Length: 459
Image 1 (cartoon, one colour):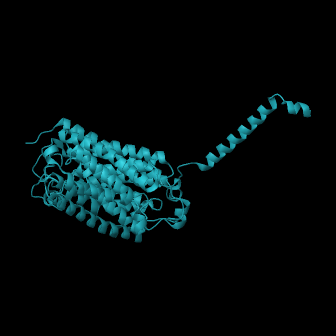
Image 2 (cartoon, helix red, strand yellow; image 1 turned 30 degrees about the horizontal axis):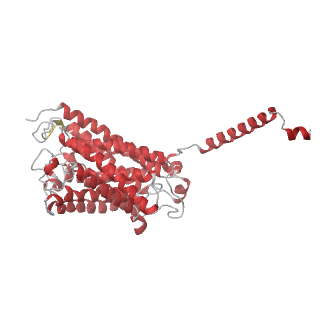
């Protein structure tokens, strides 16, 4: 009979708090990259995800994602509704098991808290693709629909012990390369296509308005990601330790890879590039963090860091407006991280994730695992893109997903929230008063200075 493990429980609860911190971190990361007239809307688009997804998770999200996790014969496609409203998860009455998750010794309530934070940040990632032009109410409705018909079922496929991508295809995805990043990246692409381009796209300057915000957000994401990845072990164990190290290693090499690509393309190393490279590395190592060695993690970070720097140009090549490069970083980075497992998986060195996975190609495993990874990535991308597109189209054609052109030009902060991030009028007044004071002080000082020899002569 499984018993409570207080150490593992403490680690999972702490990791849950770390993952929650990632959503405000994402808000600052995205918020710094938008124009000044849109920053509050971006913060709110992320913040509202915390509120509405939490309610949906309690009502039915946990049940659909993990409701039959303790049932070996449960459906591989969804968890059902037997635990709606978090019903009976403390006692496990619906499945005949105590309220402990597998052999981890962690209460199902703690696992529910941890997985809730994944459900919150995944739709928040999409917000960057439609920045500067999104109606707040339309976005909120879209988020509720998206997690209901896309995230919750896909989370079951990938994370639940009996999910078909996990148990049947034996896809290795330790912390969400498919369920989180490919899923959100496909949704971002669909939304960007439905919503359309920003007014003045490729004509007006749309540079990041606050680069320190970008770096702050990247730092918060990096910090929280240790809970995201290492917390997915659900145990304070050796596996969590190697995951922690691999996360750090891959993120650092991704920064180097991105900056190298940036230097080749533009001749400079930018601060935004360093922050974006770190996020690309975090994305890529997410599915692979428990199946590669630290040496393998070097390449799982370096390759996506370099490639994603070029991938952000896909929007120019195919003429879609992904405002903050969600497709180039999260979709491409998620796909690369998922596929690179098929090359670098090294279960002899670190111990494989317990789902029947095989060694990667470079470690004598042949192409079997690479093919399984490809199947998993393709299934999630296809499902998420098609359903995301249809859902976005439905919301856009009914209550509206995009603000009017006039509102967009004015700024969505003002038109959607009746606020501005910066009091430009007050700032102008302060600068004017400072200038007047400085001029008066200068004049007063000039009157008290002794006359020069030239002035004496004239006198």
